[in-house]
Image (cartoon, rainbow over all chains, first blue to last red; front, side, top):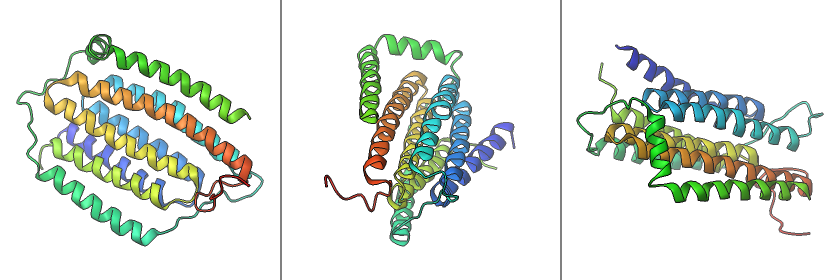
Length: 163
Length: 103
């Protein structure tokens, strides 16, 4: 039982429990706050896998941005004067059967496959330098296109929500 | 106890994906459907980072995960704007009752 093992199981429990509550709870606000826990757990996974920069980006973008956006959506689309902010579910039984079968197939294919694992899996000394080099060399076009896409999304969201 | 390997991370991401799929197909509220979508994107991102680490070629998988995060941000901004418009027109956001393109 190393610290690595303990933290892996801790983060896995956080992710799976909070994700379960996100998709089953009736209260939209509870779901949003459980989503916060899920994002924290996933950030912990990234840190365990040696992706420190991605973990920080996950915290900033998901927790600081997307989750706040979702909470704004909850606040603006429910009548706050109503005491209950609740939502229902439908087709629960067929959905659970099919999703259960699907997850069984997915897990079987993930575990039975013999992945080609590199013998030495080094933890990169500074991932930020590696990512920056790749972004500015091989993937420069995608990087620029993503910048334009974010601008278009900003303008589009503003113009859709205004009218 | 077994050492934590590539399969452990992949199993957790598979389960997270399944939870997200379940949320997308069963929830009524459009915002809850969006939350399921975020779970699915996170599961995909865990896979990217896991393969990046165990492949020994750290950079490329992490850059792909970065791109997924950017696309998720853009997607949720646009989706929230659309949901707000739906709420303005229908006074509700239940996806099973919104079935009119126009009055």
